[in-house]
Length: 329
Image (cartoon, rainbow, N blue to C red; front, top):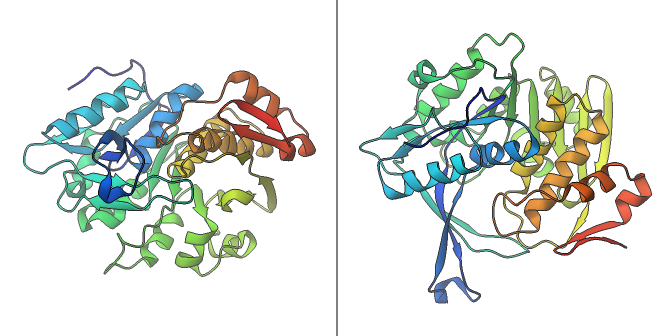
């Protein structure tokens, strides 16, 4: 379908990506006449961030044999992502969704029922090459799409791992779980090695967003990251817990920031960075996405990243990111 980078991905991301339409002009959504087509999907977002962070990545999913499917695979490949594992479904369509952009929130409307990706199942494993893969990244969106997708996630979690780490971003979407049992998310997350969750979604799934209490309910994963929105994030590993505040950002649009955080955190983890650096890398990547309407923003300038990674706690808290760069507050 398209060319892919040579070499093996270090991070393999599996999950649905869709054609995404966002307003190309200001105004109420029912009056907007021009829309911009781009792409969106939690797992492909993570995959697209990673090459710019120096981490080879791959993305596996299913798309329809249609213009939307071909366009999104080309776009993901153009970010440097290995897309050789993508399946083209000759019958089912590529899903799509519409996002009404705004700094205070972005209502999203999905048109993904019966999509090609929703038909994925355990048979997909026979197409996967884990040679060189160090992290398998999944999210709680995939098992909500269909029974076959749930079976796929369970089959992936059942695989012998060796040194492979399984990363699981809870990504609880209430609308997707309507009529399904969201407690399945707790079961699946408990079988991963690294779990990322927002405190709000953890409250819905486990009944608490408190990192210490959540850790007791999730004893299995080696690493737990609890994101607290604009306040920051807490990393819990073993008996150690560390909170790192988020950066102040002039937010253009918030959707995609969680995926960006996951990519920054995973990239720093693979480099063997210390806990604070791992959290700060997540915040920096999230900030880059908050500064754009796209789900995957351009990385911050190396000079900005170096400045903020080396900042002391007061300097980090005082920094504010704008479209023009870093401003001290």
